[in-house]
Image (cartoon, rainbow, N blue to C red):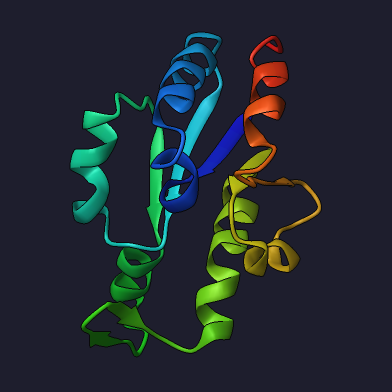
Length: 137
Protein backbone atom coordinates (compact mmCIF):
# COMPACT_ATOMS: atom_id res chain seq x y z
CA UNK A 1 0.00 0.00 0.00
CA UNK A 2 1.09 3.59 -0.63
CA UNK A 3 0.29 6.03 2.18
CA UNK A 4 0.46 9.81 2.00
CA UNK A 5 0.81 11.95 5.14
CA UNK A 6 0.59 15.73 5.30
CA UNK A 7 3.24 17.41 7.43
CA UNK A 8 1.71 20.60 8.86
CA UNK A 9 -1.34 19.83 10.96
CA UNK A 10 -0.75 16.08 10.92
CA UNK A 11 2.83 14.87 11.46
CA UNK A 12 3.84 17.99 13.40
CA UNK A 13 0.79 17.62 15.68
CA UNK A 14 1.19 13.85 16.21
CA UNK A 15 4.93 13.20 15.73
CA UNK A 16 5.15 10.30 18.23
CA UNK A 17 2.22 8.46 16.67
CA UNK A 18 3.45 8.91 13.11
CA UNK A 19 7.01 7.97 14.02
CA UNK A 20 5.73 4.59 15.24
CA UNK A 21 3.26 4.12 12.40
CA UNK A 22 5.66 5.07 9.59
CA UNK A 23 8.30 2.68 10.93
CA UNK A 24 5.74 -0.11 11.27
CA UNK A 25 4.31 0.49 7.80
CA UNK A 26 7.70 0.64 6.09
CA UNK A 27 8.80 -2.52 7.95
CA UNK A 28 5.72 -4.21 6.48
CA UNK A 29 6.70 -3.10 2.96
CA UNK A 30 4.36 -0.13 2.49
CA UNK A 31 5.46 3.13 0.84
CA UNK A 32 5.22 6.31 2.90
CA UNK A 33 4.94 9.63 1.05
CA UNK A 34 5.36 12.84 3.05
CA UNK A 35 3.23 15.48 1.33
CA UNK A 36 3.60 19.17 2.18
CA UNK A 37 2.86 22.60 0.87
CA UNK A 38 6.13 24.05 2.15
CA UNK A 39 9.56 23.73 0.61
CA UNK A 40 11.14 20.39 1.50
CA UNK A 41 14.28 22.08 2.82
CA UNK A 42 12.12 23.79 5.45
CA UNK A 43 10.65 20.60 6.91
CA UNK A 44 13.40 18.04 6.29
CA UNK A 45 15.06 18.73 9.65
CA UNK A 46 11.74 18.25 11.49
CA UNK A 47 11.12 14.95 9.71
CA UNK A 48 14.49 13.78 10.98
CA UNK A 49 13.92 15.25 14.48
CA UNK A 50 10.50 13.54 14.75
CA UNK A 51 12.03 10.25 13.53
CA UNK A 52 9.56 9.91 10.66
CA UNK A 53 10.24 7.10 8.19
CA UNK A 54 9.38 7.71 4.54
CA UNK A 55 9.96 6.45 1.04
CA UNK A 56 9.26 9.61 -0.98
CA UNK A 57 8.22 13.18 -0.43
CA UNK A 58 6.27 15.80 -2.35
CA UNK A 59 6.39 19.57 -1.84
CA UNK A 60 3.81 21.71 -3.62
CA UNK A 61 6.21 24.66 -3.73
CA UNK A 62 9.19 22.64 -4.97
CA UNK A 63 7.04 20.92 -7.59
CA UNK A 64 5.64 24.16 -8.99
CA UNK A 65 9.03 25.85 -8.92
CA UNK A 66 10.37 22.99 -11.05
CA UNK A 67 7.49 23.51 -13.51
CA UNK A 68 7.97 27.27 -13.64
CA UNK A 69 4.49 27.96 -12.25
CA UNK A 70 3.96 31.67 -11.60
CA UNK A 71 4.30 32.11 -7.82
CA UNK A 72 4.88 35.03 -5.53
CA UNK A 73 7.04 34.93 -2.39
CA UNK A 74 5.36 36.78 0.48
CA UNK A 75 6.32 37.16 4.11
CA UNK A 76 4.34 34.08 5.17
CA UNK A 77 5.20 31.80 2.25
CA UNK A 78 4.69 31.20 -1.44
CA UNK A 79 1.45 32.09 -3.21
CA UNK A 80 -0.09 30.96 -6.47
CA UNK A 81 -3.68 30.73 -7.70
CA UNK A 82 -5.76 28.69 -5.23
CA UNK A 83 -7.03 26.26 -7.85
CA UNK A 84 -3.48 25.31 -8.85
CA UNK A 85 -2.32 24.96 -5.23
CA UNK A 86 -5.40 23.06 -4.03
CA UNK A 87 -5.33 20.38 -6.73
CA UNK A 88 -1.59 19.65 -6.39
CA UNK A 89 -1.78 17.04 -3.61
CA UNK A 90 -4.56 15.15 -5.36
CA UNK A 91 -2.72 15.14 -8.67
CA UNK A 92 0.40 13.82 -6.95
CA UNK A 93 -1.60 11.07 -5.23
CA UNK A 94 -3.20 10.10 -8.54
CA UNK A 95 0.18 9.99 -10.32
CA UNK A 96 1.75 7.93 -7.53
CA UNK A 97 -1.36 5.77 -6.96
CA UNK A 98 -1.51 6.63 -3.25
CA UNK A 99 -4.11 4.43 -1.52
CA UNK A 100 -4.59 6.41 1.69
CA UNK A 101 -3.84 10.04 2.58
CA UNK A 102 -3.95 11.76 5.99
CA UNK A 103 -4.61 15.53 5.90
CA UNK A 104 -6.03 18.11 8.28
CA UNK A 105 -7.41 20.40 5.56
CA UNK A 106 -10.62 19.45 3.75
CA UNK A 107 -9.86 22.04 1.06
CA UNK A 108 -7.83 19.35 -0.72
CA UNK A 109 -10.36 16.50 -0.46
CA UNK A 110 -12.41 17.25 -3.63
CA UNK A 111 -9.27 17.02 -5.73
CA UNK A 112 -8.30 13.51 -4.63
CA UNK A 113 -8.76 10.65 -7.08
CA UNK A 114 -11.11 7.72 -6.47
CA UNK A 115 -8.09 5.45 -5.91
CA UNK A 116 -7.18 7.35 -2.72
CA UNK A 117 -9.05 7.40 0.57
CA UNK A 118 -8.76 10.86 2.13
CA UNK A 119 -8.63 10.73 5.94
CA UNK A 120 -9.48 14.02 7.59
CA UNK A 121 -7.28 14.43 10.66
CA UNK A 122 -9.19 16.32 13.32
CA UNK A 123 -7.56 17.03 16.65
CA UNK A 124 -10.74 16.37 18.62
CA UNK A 125 -11.09 12.70 17.69
CA UNK A 126 -7.94 11.64 15.90
CA UNK A 127 -6.18 10.08 18.89
CA UNK A 128 -8.99 7.55 19.40
CA UNK A 129 -9.00 6.76 15.68
CA UNK A 130 -5.23 6.29 15.54
CA UNK A 131 -5.23 3.93 18.54
CA UNK A 132 -7.61 1.68 16.63
CA UNK A 133 -5.56 2.08 13.45
CA UNK A 134 -2.33 0.96 15.14
CA UNK A 135 -3.75 -2.52 15.52
CA UNK A 136 -4.14 -2.78 11.74
CA UNK A 137 -1.09 -4.12 9.87
